[in-house]
Image (tube, rainbow, N blue to C red; front, side, top):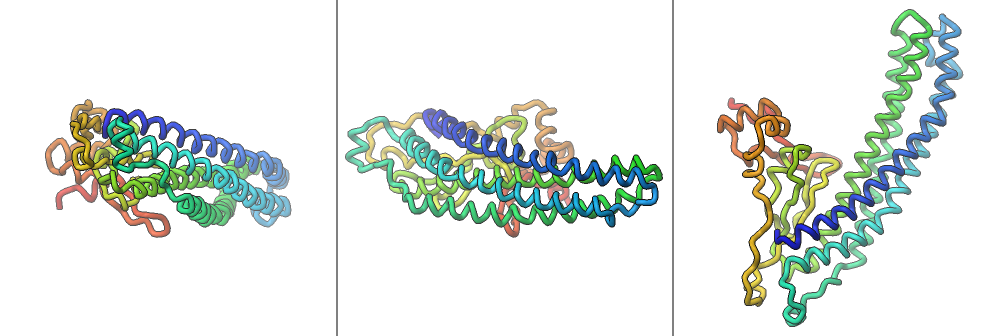
Amino acid sequence: MLPEQVAATHALRVKIDEHVDDTVRRVVARWADVWDTVAPLWAAAAQAAADDPQAWKIARADRYAAALSATLEALQAAVEDSNVTLTATLPDLIADTATGYADLIRTGLPDDPDALARLGVGFDRVDQDALTQIVARTTERVTALSWPIVDEVHRVLAAQLAAGTVLGDNPRTVAARIVRLARDPIDMGLARALVIARTEMLDAYREAARHAETAHRDVLAGWEWDANLDTRTCAACIVMHGTVHPLDQSGPEGHPQCRCARVPVTKPWRELGFDIDEPPSSTVDAHAWFDAQPDRVQRGILGAGVHDLYTRGLVDWEDLAVKRANPGWRDSYTPTPLAALQPA
């Protein structure tokens, strides 16, 4: 990655993160409305249990049934509204990716407009129909992944409440537990919705970037995996940082919510006809970066067991990341678990 590409990559990441973070804030606000709506109903159901010590099987109570029905209705509305919010953001995210990626590709070439013109390099080749299809596919995926949240929350809600009503011998303790157990599955649904929102928006950005690269394959040799090298980055992303992949390969195939980026790798300048030496790459050697970190940082990233195997030379650097199949989603690179690394 050339020095100018570092700045261009950062600028594009900031723009994409703005779209993602704004959408996440709006989804969180919408799900907060769910609890605000149904909390009084659960409080009333809980109070009914406290007022009647014999009402241990609260699942049969009319107030419980009303609270559960209202919760499911509110969840369905929240999922639908969240999906509308997310998919409405996608066209702008995709458009900003196309524009930002044109700048990113440009920074990988010499700053010589005349030479670029002679080479026939243009930066407006991205197929708009392809970008529209990315929006449509992402919308379909978000919808397919989001709707099961309602059924999952319903199942957990019913199971937790059924268990909660037979715990303890104090009706008021049971009443407080009912409200808490009603809130937990809703929070679980929100967490799941946020993972879907972040992951699918970032994957849409990467797919738009891939199309931009494909449109400029005459000057590009592939793409480079770019991760943030810091203590919050997982071992798999650190290991994959700096690896180069074919243009047609999707990716980076990171874990859910992974914020790694793909950076276009330009063909050698002399191969393109430029009689000029290229500046040295600014890509940080991830292996060297990791080995330079204090032991406490390395252990925090790898975990104590994996770190012990690594420092003893029992596993290689490339062994620390593994590609896993995820039916219903996509393959992704994740940190290799300790059990898979331990000698037989």
